[in-house]
Image (tube, rainbow, N blue to C red; front, side, top):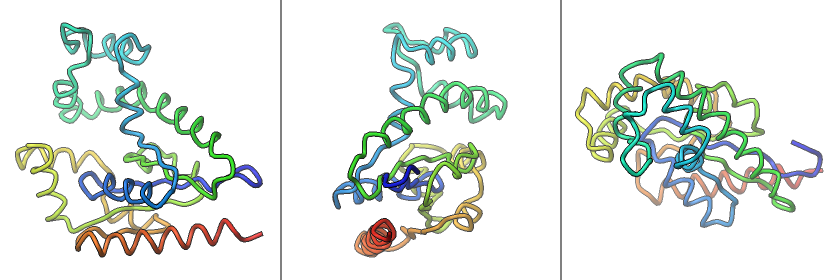
Length: 205
């Protein structure tokens, strides 16, 4: 962080632990936010260099007739093959982190901004941020949410969970934790407290 600049805050956690809800809540409180998943999505828009790299690595069969990426087919492939997943990450992550870096540079006069980065610890980029917030819930809730949200079988859901760092380890490494196991109101109260805490940190000389 440059002197006088905004605190760089990352929001991460396990898949299906409520990151999107929390990010929207931060935004509703006036905190600038950015979603790495959206950056990753736009990184492989038709005509992009990243999409061309994906097609070279995984085959042009993953491209639909209109030139767009068949994301569902790619997901099935990479979650079944750790080597393929790493190759995809090496294509996408540099684009995503460059986008986040550029975004933080625009936050003039803001005390802090929050970037939702699902694979923050997995990519070894947590040191890029001043504070890390981790969302968590019970393992049973996480599994059920993932199955419901993604329309996945239990085996598919467990496969995706296994592809990430264990949630307990993310919680251990966090500066702030949001437990989304309870009601929306309980989650909101935790977010309010974190906003107050980080804002107070930024006001210190």
